[in-house]
Length: 452
Ligand code: S3P
Image (cartoon, rainbow, N blue to C red; front, side):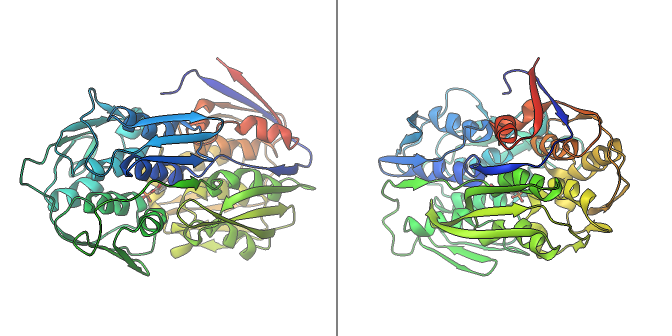
């Protein structure tokens, strides 16, 4: 899905200063498009990211007969109702987006038409058994493809239609891993089921789907890490269109904010960041390690999501141990935290983060390699990493491995390293953070982008 290859050239930079906005939250963006497409009429969404991941979801709905267009920053979604999607004329290309594929796997399992979903090389290596198995258990005709690991299923995914008179069944499922993608796939399929969807996670993962369903009147109840959706409760079987604003993505805000924490003399603010507590692990972590971080509430966005302006100024930080529930709330920020750890006094140890091995790349292995390339000492663990702070960094040539967050985390290290840092495969950043280089340049960073 990437248009052309890109390379970043990064040099050691002076203090970063300024107030910026980041693209809309990727997770909330996907879900706003999904709920808009299934609503009864025209929904309007502002702040939606122009990143390629959200574009994959947008395109998927277009191919199923949903009109989606953007005018002056407002995305209009002509919802067709829960039963109004049409069979796509071709395969659904999810590009690099695991969220598109896993959420749509749930939604499309409940349809009376068949679909086939494909992804790029990175997505094709990611495990899909975690959604396919529970969906099958509730009667979906869904199949994956065998691949690297026996007992695992990978894309492409094929879904055969439910026949006349057939419906998905209720399910009670204790999820083995905390995953908002799996939870959301099951809740979306639950909209089409003839019994309740009862889910329990080991730790509550991001709860955007639940917040949106509740705000749209879907009969849902939550308690801690449990959720129940009962479509047989008193419910009209759909929802009216809405006007939602997508808050800034905390996983993108992490990069300018951590740059400020890392580069002496810096002070950066990011406006309208989503501060849903299931997403604020990084901000809590920064407070814990002594960073200078402040938070000013700024209202609510799509489906009752709290927003705030977050500011970080450079200050000396200490190494610490991160493990357990906070990891789930900062899972996408851990590569950037590994970069930050280079500036901490002492060691930073990350644990309970084995899920990082099945993201857009094996983020523990790729980040360990990135750190070593810059001259940083670290140990990779099966479920995490120990990074030793205080090294003098030298510029390096880094391959993103097609992973946006690796390219951006390496950029943070490049801001501190002597000489030049070259980041190959930087086009991956367009999946979540179009305008990344311009934003960093506006703060004073020395970064150049080359289109190859
Ligand atoms: C996401 C959930 C998380 C996260 C991903 C987006 C979502 O993945 O890492 O970037 O929007 O539901 P898991 O559900 O696999 O934990």
